[in-house]
Image (cartoon, rainbow over all chains, first blue to last red; front, top):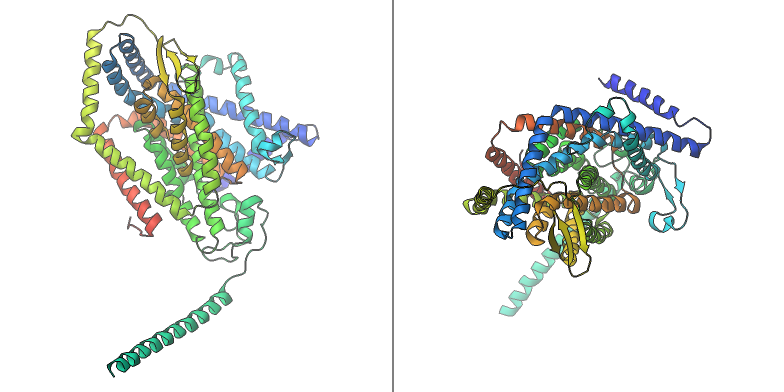
Length: 181
Length: 402
């Protein structure tokens, strides 16, 4: 098992670093490689979530239905000026919403699990690399920043791009976007 | 004559005391010399580790014993030579349990994630070995545990907030004031506690909070605690019976109608709600201070605060709580990692996320076979036991047998 894991890590390392050696310019290569790495994270996360939605669809639908019913009722109570019923329904909904809230929290792990691994790999490769900042960013972030400071915005950017190209991608165009969409 | 006798006796006592003190000081001096002679040399180099971790390493004693750094050892936690080797499989399996709790019980999952960092993975014991030999390293590992908890919570809150935003259930004006409180709170916590909290202190406070949660769960099971829930259920059912649902209103979102520092109004499903920004700020400050100190999300505090104190409907509270947790965690993580230079062990967090996700898949399929009340009792026992254990171990050094 340990040997397999060690082999896997070496293989993944070789694969990922390939994208950091395209042009020979260290800054350009760092950005190209980080964009590719972020895209892999987005795709792996979205694929995991799609499996989860298929696997637990019935449970998720039941939860959403219960929430919607309670929500409609309490707003109707508020609308009709029945404050006592509104408060009661609000309290009643706490359990349904609480369960949904924490289930969503757990599901989000399915989208984001590749991110810490990517950061861990970046740490092993670019631990000592520092990117100098210019004024006024130096006031908030200091003179230099590390790999995480670049990776996080690039990852967010890739998520946004993915949203637009999703309908054109095989497999992803057929799956539901999120448990509540 | 009598006075002289007392004087002699007094002199004797003073002489004996002086002799005892002299003996004690000689013994202490010899012991000290011996200790200094035996005291291992400091590492004296950062061993390739930058920032505060490198500083702490260089000031730690070199050697292969407990509380020492072995410069030739294999790199372990945070790249520390000879440091604890974390087993990703243990992290993974514990995280499955955490995910299972998240999807069946709820808030207690975050607490169990913290228990994993402190106890199950052995990071707490590792930090404790440096208590006297290298206090700076003890505090650094403690801060790393806190920030690891914050990463788990923050990443989860990020996706939850995004989903609630898509459903138009975020009250941004409320999130703004809560977030403002969170900003001041996290700055306050980082400047007052980063690099200053020993692991034992952190464990003690963490235990106290788990204990309070356990006590609250017990209260909810008592006739008095469950009475209000029963009354709410009855009132809800009565209302449900009395009306005919005419329209589906789920597609409407939230609109902020009036911004002011005294009162802010927003509409939700066509109804107007209001809140005091001042109370939102105060709540955001205190809840975020507790959450960032302990490295927990604080959702279990935000929800009752926003529904009971601020008086908002549950349907906007869940999303706005997630947003508040996210804002608090972003500030806390940024302040700890960028301003205070704390590091985390990324592969462990990754393995935990995978485990949490798998656990949350299993939860709905297995949790339904265990009655809610039984689940609650199990977690009350866990909360009380863990709360006591951490409280006693952290503040008084008393180790419970199990």
